[in-house]
Image 1 (cartoon, helix red, strand yellow):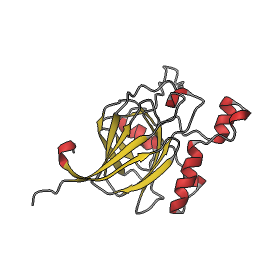
Image 2 (cartoon, one colour):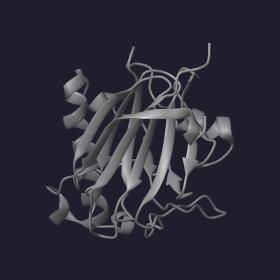
Image 3 (cartoon, one colour):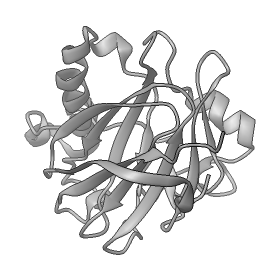
Length: 212
């Protein structure tokens, strides 16, 4: 579906810097995630709203599309082989699904003991998933929208400075009723957020009625 296939704007919210957010995206609706100020990573988990045991699978998505990155045309695939959503527009062209989410534990390993109590995406996910009766065991490998994680010929990767300019966006269309759980990444120890977490914006449109 292109932009012209959508009509009514049904939601327009700003996710504050460092904060979690969630919403049920109905089948056929389009979600636009906007990097308002640029160079801001957003970690994302996706679950079937009807059965949260069905959830986004990074492995199946990478295998299905034959690419390590998320971008225009990517179909997000579940652990049951179903298409959950499709990327229909993308002005950034750089989205990761291999590097995982930051946590207090990984901060300590990578950046030292002084970072142990800094807030992280894993903690954001735990807080938000608790609203739906889920917890740590339900955190699967995630998508990192707008995060620049190049992979070299030897298979090594690193988190580098974000390349998304202010106003960059990516559009997803839901192929099922989809619980979307976002962490507006609070990381300040690597350049994924330009060392300065900022707000992002989410807009959702209903699909236009189909002709009889």
